[in-house]
Image 1 (cartoon, rainbow over the protein chains, first blue to last red):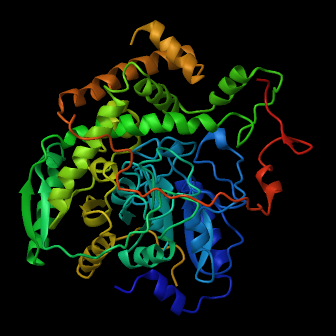
Image 2: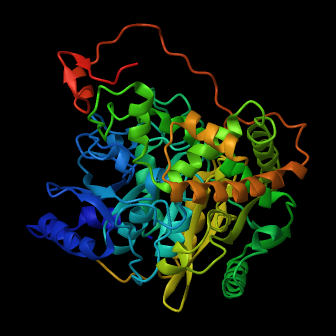
Image 3: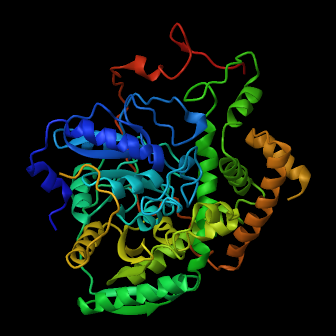
Length: 449
Length: 90
């Protein structure tokens, strides 16, 4: 498949193309709430948007949090800096769950709505990034995943969502959630555009010591492994559709094997323990006078001043700070935090053994896209358990892609494919092959030529 | 979680909750800790803690001073007095 970037760059664009594009998006944004801001000054290049927790120089980057309102980074994140230039133009910042704390895209002011049907959620936390990729014909979203924040909304909004091996793309310029889990990734309408962007933004960075310089491979696999436990709580209609996908893939020459990882359901509590522990320390930097929100009363003592500032966190952020602080406390650290770190190590070894000569495949989400009203009613444990399939590869730092494979009552379904560390390109090859015989559907084509 | 421990935790976290928020979070924390406790039965003590999901070599930078070209931009997000960031009393 050619992909949108090459097609766009080869085509002549009418005069006023970018002005029309931003006007149309402005109008659509008043309904779907996809963008935190739209760059009206864009006048060249293939449009790219950036999730609101990734810094863009001189543009408000608030991670959709009230505590960072007004924060203007004086620098570009490395991924953004590497993308700027003659081929790309910055289009805007996309909305998200505050700091990435959410599965449904609802944890922010004026949350995004699903472009396929506005009664439904987009998924999160890269909610606006997925919706933007779905509505704009020529565009890529720079997004971020900690525990499934790219795969989940990609599945619900019917786009391709790529999460790389941990450390392949520099994290410099991310507003941190959980430093050992955060990964910048890419969302688009096709795998070719993701490959194009990945080639531009990957690689070592002197500003991020966790950014690795390992060579990325493209080792193909004939075997697709389905982990039994991951399908246990999957909606029956999704299971039926997923079975049809497996049959199609078998017809394409893949072998399907079913395997078992008995403890894989424990990846979710382990993930939440680690991510909350790291989040509770990362959020301590928002003190009310250095970034974003300013507490006006400097006469107050530091503790009172700091407490005033933290009133601006959402209820979910407060919940994670309290729990993250608790699991790190001396009396229970070995029971929760250290145990979760050991469990992650065990999970990595188990998944490595399975991925040695095959890919892992599953539906991306265990549920059909929920309506906004349904998702709002879920309690935290119910909501966290929706990440049952997206968490394991994220916890293990493994590359994975969610791609559309079916439509159920007009809403897209996504499948997730996972490979071993640094074999990222093999996943894009796999999805590229899938795209040769399956046409993705979109409701909008904003910016079509 | 006991009320006394919960209040202590809020103090450590420097969080002030409204009465409604306090009850909601306290209940949620009980449910979430029950969920976290499900990892207790997993036998994984022989594995070392994984601080990163991939192996990352130690990287060191040369210990040399480099000029930063635009220090003024770093201060734009703060209230400034002369060349100091203004903050609360300690």
